Picture 1 (cartoon, rainbow, N blue to C red):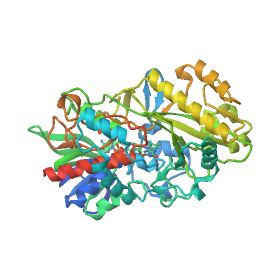
Picture 2 (picture 1 turned 180 degrees about the vertical axis):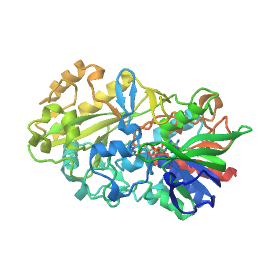
Picture 3 (picture 1 turned 90 degrees about the vertical axis):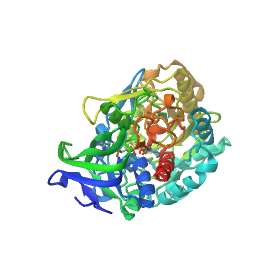
Picture 4 (picture 1 turned 30 degrees about the vertical axis):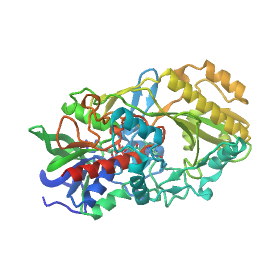
Length: 502
Ligand SMILES: Cc1cc2nc3c(=O)[nH]c(=O)nc-3n(C[C@H](O)[C@H](O)[C@H](O)COP(=O)(O)OP(=O)(O)OC[C@H]3O[C@@H](n4cnc5c(N)ncnc54)[C@H](O)[C@@H]3O)c2cc1C
């Protein structure tokens, strides 16, 4: 078929097997895939993006959690890592990838992280001097700005009240949600199209420069000849059953793998690619998080207002406390003692401690192309910081006038003082904590030393020429802040280096 420049094609509409030529084929349309497409198309290359999930418009999505899990989340929202705890690890599967259902929080990569990448992994461009101009370009393209107070609403403002009362240095969070109306449904995608997820920002910029996008199209294999990637084999998918239909064979000068930190290593392991040093699927880092809920006299209605609008750093730790809101049913499950009478839900505010971990897990292919098998065990030192963050969150809520605070510990109810909470936290075994992890990273880490990583610092795999990885899997370490800006910035740098290499 002719290259469908500037167009979106649904893989399930192909009526026969097809073949295409392009300069670069990109696997996955999330943060890394879209940023790569944007940069490569801008450089005048013919770019094809293949995405296994569907393309959704705001008017097509439902505001029901169950619908979102079924249609927008990989593995129907059931992916979990097992170890000394069950760790839910959701991720997106749609045009836009996880950015379609993220909270739009934007942080630049912390300096301490960049220093470590440069010192321990030899990544030459990991410095603020190199990256600040790229952060600025990415933030401009996504229309990042600080949450306006008017959209923060009570569940963010009550947290700020506690932060101010304790003299801490908190702030409103910067977000890529220029059309946000504060309806609190970000993690079900945005029903008003107010979020600058990459399906609405970077991908249209790439298509505007001649790139093409296939949705409902799963890449099954990288074609390799004489040690170099030369294209991919993909199938259009029936959108509901995911059954493979027509074949699409793509010839390309370079293949960019941007399937995310869970799918990308699974993809390489299934095909036995790029793993001579044995790092593919290892070193899984996450941001483990645990939320604390507080009950106030006044009405909060946490589901109104920006989902995550205010933050404060946990001093001296690679961790940040961020407010969050969820749908009423999630509150009722997580903080059961607050669920009756239902009226109580209107008086709750919540905030989570999100930690850049030192622990490492693994990702392996699961029993079918879309299933993962992951392991992860929380270490004692990471657990100590999570508990410290939960205590600090409770201290902030008490300073804001909370009646009581619920740490979501299984079998434990709310407490009225920090002393009581300390006793609960000291006695609770790890598996009674509700820990959650939404940011997988580092499973194909980059390193300047072949024996330490899967890719070089310019993203090309050490073992397969012209196979480039540009997603959250290449981070050498955990970040300690929400990762989408780092993913897009790293992908931008990698794409530009590949253009320069020719
Ligand atoms: C619920 C939730 C909330 C979050 N909130 C925030 C936030 O507020 N701020 C922030 O900075 N980060 C947030 N994140 C994380 C952030 O969105 C991710 O870190 C980022 O999107 C990762 O980018 P990626 O390119 O690595 O992968 P993804 O964005 O996940 O994209 C990978 C894409 O590749 C596709 N794919 C995989 N394999 C194939 C294949 N074989 N063929 C075709 N396509 C394939 C997948 O379907 C998917 O669409 C959140 C994540 C989640 C899940």
